[in-house]
Image 1 (cartoon, rainbow, N blue to C red):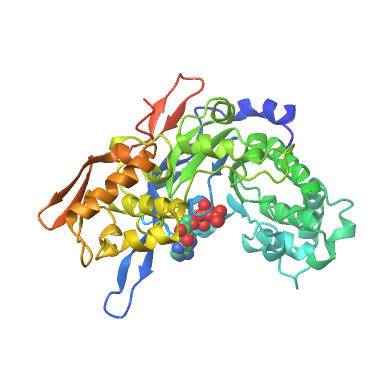
Image 2: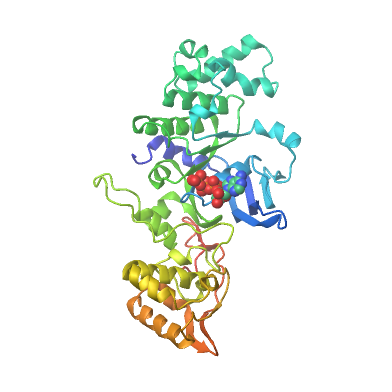
Length: 435
Ligand SMILES: Nc1ncnc2c1ncn2[C@@H]1O[C@H](COP(=O)(O)OP(=O)(O)OP(=O)(O)O)[C@@H](O)[C@H]1O
């Protein structure tokens, strides 16, 4: 992906620091998990969990993170396509988080979405003139069909579907992927919106057209005074496209700041890991270097900092808990082999004791024929072999207490997003290690 062109850079000052378009405060979007017959509310997936930021008019804000970090849910919630379960979204000062569908409808003209899949975004049975003109019709902006066709033709020209006469009566199946996404963009801008949320708008397109579509977004922004939220897992395109970037992890923003500053001086360990994992175009096939493990279950997020189980530099106060011991033992057995797993796991009578979320002391029942001292001895050996693992920084005691073996963890806390750095490069980071 090329670096950001001058046209975009010159439009950056239009992002008037004093003019706020959207202000999000402590936003939460939790999806209830359906339990069984007798347990109807089995918790919730915390897709967005306490997000706050300000979107300035004229800027491009990137929401970046791995799959499941809550980017799409956040983008959709800004437009009322998902309901907020808590917190606030102010659009030009007006609260829109709790609005009903009927109250939201007039706002939809101003707040539009471009989805990832242009094929799915267009009704295959609707010609391009009707599809692109649809917002003008539903908002009653241009009731006359002939006038609407003229306006659609102008808009198609603007998005590069030119000459428009060639496209007006075509159907989506007649268009290439890039042309379809241009038609989707025409539909998104035709009613004169202020904000576009673009959710991975190029990820399903051929490599050859991706840069052109992003350039079109930038041209439209400059010409039509638009503001964008760009949802992506691809930092390379975010670098090209965004004025500011919010790095998301498990429903939280862990770092937010100007794109150049995030790339030049990443502060959060997760941001550093993501930047380190950007594929090098010179080295095709080199594995991505993301931190160990998967993104945890958003229904049962880790204690303290949600990133701590994967964080190479985590410290005592990051929120270590019983589940981290289970993960450590799994890593140990992966290295030690299947025989070691079989004999050593027999020391634990109830493996579920290692799986309980949120426990700062894990109390382990020895398996048949074993004692608490055997478990303590095993953990001592594992510690020797994994002494560099960040996990041990959080352990304050491993000892037998009566019949059981106990592991205590240091008290942890959840780092909140805090401002760091100077005024020009203002960055906020949620990490205990970043002061
Ligand atoms: N409608 C829903 N009902 C239940 N859970 C949902 C729903 N939508 C999203 N989730 C869950 O919320 C979490 C965040 O999902 P979301 O799609 O917002 O993440 P994302 O960062 O956009 O991921 P991706 O890049 O894969 O789209 C995930 O755990 C997901 O499974």
